[in-house]
Image (tube, rainbow, N blue to C red; front, side):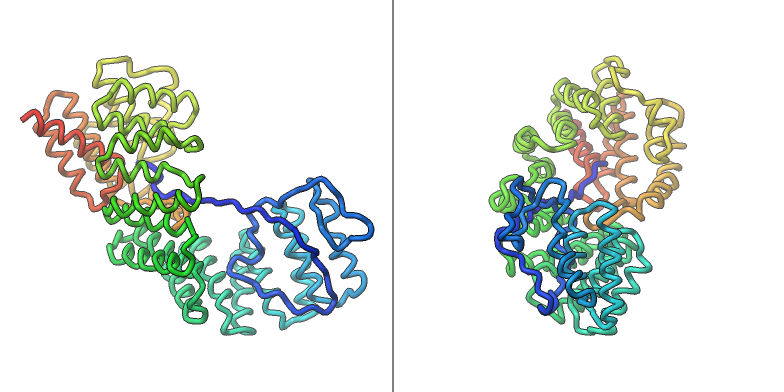
Length: 461
């Protein structure tokens, strides 16, 4: 099973091209749902320092050592100016390092001490606390924003992110974003984020079609409000894949690439693989230069096509680049056995997986290497899968990946089918491949490989 859900990380660059004036009496800057500004984004650095007669223009040095000077001066002139502390904290928070994050937290706290009813300060401090994994503290700050500014859509959005991303409460996150949309119905990002939590809720728990359809509706609304958002097209395409609408998914991926040419091509390749356009899938995997798993994906497609030697070459290439996943080592193991080749090429170490900590991969390898009988393996599919789900679910987010039992059942049936196929028992193999394909998710590597094996078997009859 691959990680199917990929974060589309479109790193922004912050450029300061106009004078940034720090005024003692300027009004508060309204916080956004992403407050402070894109903490993950690097700050654009230039090498020319500011001139002495234009000290309000900030040109960022690589070490950023003097970037805070205008803010420090504003605080020196008026130590009781809460807004000056907020402004400095915003710049501190975008640096991303621990020291400046701690300074930002201190500055937000000082602003609150000077102005206890400053809702923006609580909102921004809650964001920093969340980044520091102080979820209890972040929630307390967001709750304070609700008290001071009950109609703050941004506060509901931030609170929703906290519930969904940090705690895993997708229902709570959806409710918060729904309230944010009621308060500000024209914010594309609110629909976009709610769509993530809706698809994530379905993916993690019930795999309910209604949740995926709700996510698609939200991504569509986000696109309507912001047609240039490539991410919304990308994630709507991914959600279409979960519903088996591969043509629609490919169309959305095409739009994402048009809007953002550096958009990853691997998910489009997977959609083409699922659709049955194997040549198109290989073309996308071959074009994508920054894909961690594209050699593996291409190997899986080559295997589906029956090009087993090409598949082995790509699997081995992935081993040599340390990119191969444990399940793909299992695929390589089976392909080598299929061609009666050495099952221990350089780098393929099934014992490492067998003795590892992951209960699911360990169970599969024990079965493939003969340490478990088929009956023992089938009885352990569900308990070992439950152990892995329990381990990974706290890390499962709508921006990451999720696990559910049907994936593991599908994989288990595929591996049993392959063992029967290699034992020259095509009739039983066919039965297990059909069981694999009966799983509700059409977007899993093992189900796609089972489909290819089943087609080859039926072509022989």
